[in-house]
Image 1 (cartoon, rainbow, N blue to C red):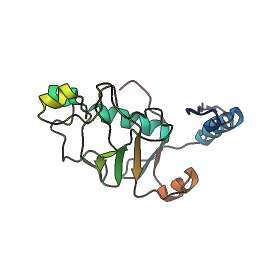
Image 2: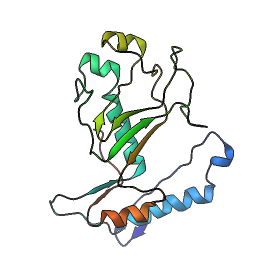
Image 3: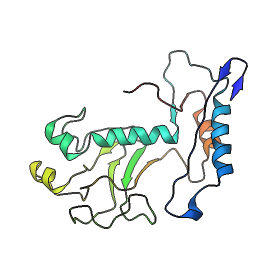
Image 4: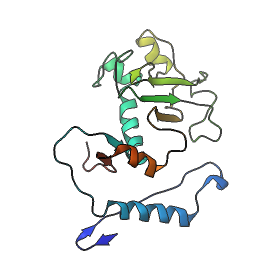
Length: 190
């Protein structure tokens, strides 16, 4: 999208295990265009304390990076910014991160992990505090814990906030944000 000298790019995609669950190409294009148009005329904030709304694709990358800190290997080798994570705060208190290996048609659904350990629905982070790690049998044993059924990876993670109500769309969340930062992308590698 372009307005004067201001140029912005937007993108979107649709992923589902079922053909009927995929958005139409017109919807994908419309959402990508809306994202690009929505960034035109964006203004920076002066230095201040302000609420932050993280766009879904950015939030998923943050969740992935945070979960990497909670793997058995990272914890055992202490290659994490959050050593001995259990019971420690990781996020804002309104956030909870659930894992559900049994989500119908979930992209990472599986009854058992790659070692044959049964999966379980669980909160990994509840109210901002770490309640679980991602452990295979080897790392669980090294840490004196029990496998969480995560050999081969994490299963269908969902980040929820008590500040977001069912049915809240982006417009509703932006209204709740008021003056604040809407984080739509990261630039750079780290």
